[in-house]
Picture 1: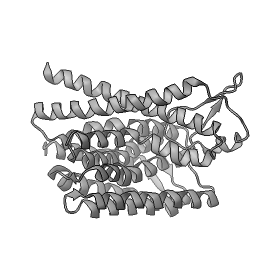
Picture 2: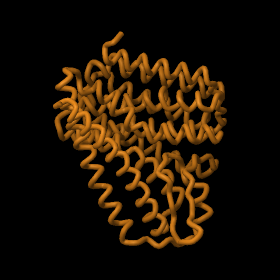
Picture 3: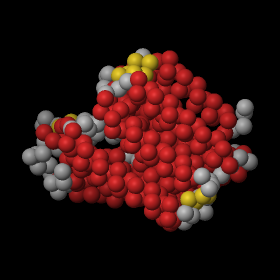
Length: 340
């Protein structure tokens, strides 16, 4: 009963965490538009950061709980799930996904660079505050580079926005894709931001904290009860749970043949996880890397990233490749749980 209780707490708290992040992102966008913040900045900053809040919030709470190994396990596990699980399922659903040259020229090198930096930072099995600062600085450089280059080349992933025909109101679906295409067209529109939007922003921030806190607490209790490392659950259950928004968006985009969204959806998330989800907690306290993350998680992350890069260079991902991604992910899960 004790174990079942904490499993139930874990599931509920993870759902609260993910949905609260959706509401936080949605209300932030509405407030940003009302304040005449550039739609481009809203899409690149608020959307990309807001939708990665579950991973970031969980990692920060883990530091305050003294479970620093959860941070790196969460980031590594989420990035593996994003590539092998999300892209794998999307490829199987689409049967064949085509990759645009813009993704190959810009996003693939950035993803490879972020993963390489994370690898070198984790080589000594810990992350110091100085290394955390380096990761944050790298993300800052990446952020400004993305803004300048994509503004010039107009190669932006879009998160579609819908307008109510009968009300002066923006309706944003809680999915992780870019919203710039329609937001640019609506730049001169002046939405009315009601008090409820601000209440939603504050309330969702509070529930992000609650969801993250009990996600970590339940994770610790489940790990103790099953006599396995917290990092194992962080790399599996937490990683899969926080990757569900990406999975839903990529599968929907793949079904609609919007392959740039389906594939590009993973790039921003993985770069944010590698640099910010590890960097921010490292500023608060030095992070430890447990053996499972170091000897199994990191090699699988490198292999998955290289595989994704080669798929990108070929400019096509077939369903058989997607199935191979899924087989590798199942192998990863069996390895961290010691099944094989």
